[in-house]
Length: 304
Ligand SMILES: *[C@@H]1O[C@H](CO)[C@@H](O)[C@H](O)[C@H]1NC(C)=O
Ligand SMILES: *[C@@H]1O[C@H](CO)[C@@H](O)[C@H](O)[C@H]1NC(C)=O
Ligand SMILES: *[C@@H]1O[C@H](CO)[C@@H](O)[C@H](O)[C@H]1NC(C)=O
Image 1: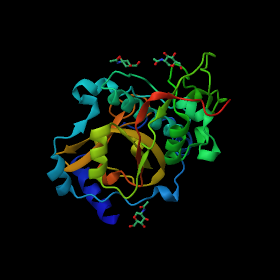
Image 2: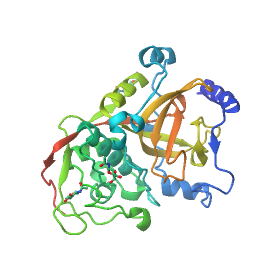
Image 3: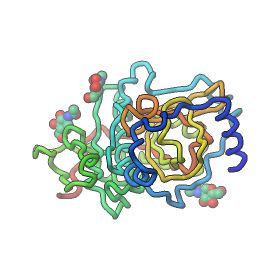
């Protein structure tokens, strides 16, 4: 850790990423504690896994340095959903899962199924048996199993509101918010994959072959101020964990570092139009997961 820290401080001095000016940016009106309480999930010990082993030369010899992004991937770029706003609710986990599965559903169908899945369905309907606590966060990995079992409904059917109410609502699993019958889309049986002890090579293969990935990451002190460039933290204070979707990877010449390109759910005002790029070695303590959406409908498995 010490070695990484020193290397990153050196990089930061030669190639600074952009941050919001003091008093600007979407979170400038919040104290550190308010920000953590509203937007992050608690830091748990099991989040602090060793970062994946990374051998830059090996990575380079397999993939080169030209990078890859679903946002610019010829006929599939429209599959990458719009940047969302989780609002004043720690529902990043539901956003990350809904977003990466919406994009994959589209990519799997060669761009034909342009559906936006609903985070609110998970916020309202998943409970403590799956370690989900609405606006107070959830265990992202168990939630993939929940989705495997219960499926997802679309955003038109179940629009998001917890960002305003700051709390979960009452689950309705067989009907949409307007009372019409809902359609649940299931995850393909056995397709849920969790990455333990993975390498960045494994993750890059999975991302390029099957679509965006979801990650949970440790959030450092200055992450909320990020406004562009390849992020290498300068303030290494750990503030909490956060779930996001990653859509690509690339290589930054000035800092000679590989990075992930990811979508946040903090509006387009934050970061690079809502996206961010983060050095492989600065993306620590995270877990990753993937799944494939099934194209068939799933039965309603529980009643409201
Ligand atoms: C996909 O859906 C989004 C959001 O509804 C819309 O903005 C976009 O134009 C759609 N793309 C296609 C190719 O239908
Ligand atoms: C969303 O789901 C509802 C039923 O749950 C369906 O009637 C509607 O066509 C779907 N909309 C989109 C855009 O897929
Ligand atoms: C990951 O690797 C560590 C150390 O080699 C080992 O103790 C642990 O059991 C592994 N975890 C999984 C889920 O494979």
